[in-house]
Amino acid sequence: MNTEETFDVKPIGRLFAVLSYFTKINLAGLMKNFSRKKAYDKGIKGILFLCASLSILTTIGIISVLIFETVEFFKEVHILDFLFDSQWTPLFYEKHFGIMSLLCGTILVTLIAMLVAIPLGILSAVYLNEYAGERFRSIAKPVLEILAGIPTVVYGYFALFFVTPLLQKVVPGLSGFNALSPGIVMGIMILPMISSLSEDAMRAVPKSLREGAYAMGATKMQVAFRVVIPAATSGIVSSFILGMSRAIGETMIVTIASGQMPRLTFDPRVPIETITAYIVQVSLGDTPVGTIEYNTIFAAGMTLFIFTFTLSIFSHWLKKRFREEYS
Amino acid sequence: MVENNVFDISALNVWYGEKQVLKDINIEIKANCVTALIGPSGCGKSTFLRCLNRMNDFIPEFHLEGKIINNGTDLYAQKIDPIEIRRDIGMVFQKPNPFPKSVYKNITFGLNIFGVKDTEKLDKIVEDSLRKAALWDEVKDDLNRSALSFSGGQQQRLCIARAIAVNPKVILFDEPCSALDPIATGKIEDLITELKKDYTVVIVTHNMQQAARISDFTGFFMLGELAEFDKTKKIFTDPSNKVTEDYITGRFG
Ligand SMILES: Nc1ncnc2c1ncn2[C@@H]1O[C@H](COP(=O)(O)OP(=O)(O)OP(=O)(O)O)[C@@H](O)[C@H]1O
Ligand SMILES: [Mg+2]
Image (cartoon, rainbow over the protein chains, first blue to last red):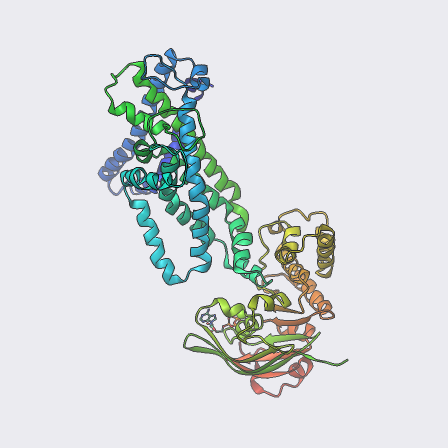
């Protein structure tokens, strides 16, 4: 698969939708509303149109640069080397461009984060929704949301200086930089998002379904796990996917706490490097623009983009597919 | 036939917060009979019905005084586990509420949560319950289809089958036909008449003819009080209370 051939411009529209989905701003709706009032105030409309176009143009710009630089990169590196070489050493004298070792780091950390965030997220959503009283929930939800507002750099140092030393006491052979600690901390970071979105999905399950189960002698736990969670599956799974996209793209925590050693391993105890951390490393270094070393970050960025883009399309598909479940 | 009481209810008072919605209700509900509860909207019929299987427990401001004795057990005694109660006293709701699962899984839901795993037994109970609910012929080839893909009347009979599957002693119906057309209603009425051989039925209805057709006893609720309770025949031919007469002849409500 060569990215320069398979990537056409059509997904821009979809990207626009995804973008407005993530920013929670209904851009398309905004524009439609204002165009209805065009007789009213054409000047305002023009300005707003410019603003909206600006965001589209920026997106187009970013993607064009990404594609352009990726094409440049693949003029020098063969796609097969990129996909199948087991080493990633563009900054060394003997260069290897095997993206798999970076991808492996990203996947490993994401996996650990999800292993922490999914069970805790579901359990806390179940607790908030089915067990907690109104008062507890009104306190707990904002607290969880504060967790989401902590700057990621704080999480990063928290992982490096607190969690890692703590883990070193129980996990034998754990290096100072590793995948485990940032993975766990990242899990804690995305936990509020998963919990809150899952809770929304569970709350949307009609009360009548719960009553139906209770009326047959089901316990609270049975109602939660056999009725509410299955009925809310699509919402819950898309919260996982959103959390996962967040984990894949997360940069600060891994840059600080996971080391800078790309390697093809699933051992969570040794230093690794993720795609995002690599991009930071090169961007902050003195790599000259236009060199192959420099272009690697675009190829890496493209890989990341394709990864998260696929995930968000999958999550949209999932939502559509299961929407009619309880209507 | 010796008629014994499934429910002996005395001095029942119910509040939602400060508001009293049931006042000094005394009533006996007989086994293997259909007891209908009628009355104008908001008079407390549903509240009363939901007291019988402790479904009101989920409402925080709900508060009850008085006694509801079910076959010798005080339903609101300290040591009573409401979960156990609801296994014996099933309920069918106004709006059909099948789970978004297959027909088969809907019926086996109750058995699964009680830990029944034997597939042969499950298959048999599924067939039996669907037959009793007069739905078997319509769904026997579609047991794995989603319950939500059936019509409202079929869904309601599925909910009845689901309630029957756990083999309760009493089934409570809260306006089970209000969302259904006359044909589906007729089927459910036949079904309820059939059910009283094996179960005790209490049904809330706004349909006077329905109460007259299927019930043995009728209770008329009015502003939270049980205005009259008697044999259905007596209530509909010779009510002792003027208000009851006005209500069933449609002069108000
Ligand atoms: N959860 C609740 N909290 C507070 N008040 C309630 C609650 N549920 C019902 N009520 C009130 O209690 C009274 C009795 O309600 P109930 O639902 O039992 O009436 P009903 O006879 O079943 O009426 P309908 O025929 O319309 O179903 C009504 O005045 C209602 O407003
Ligand atoms: Mg009611």
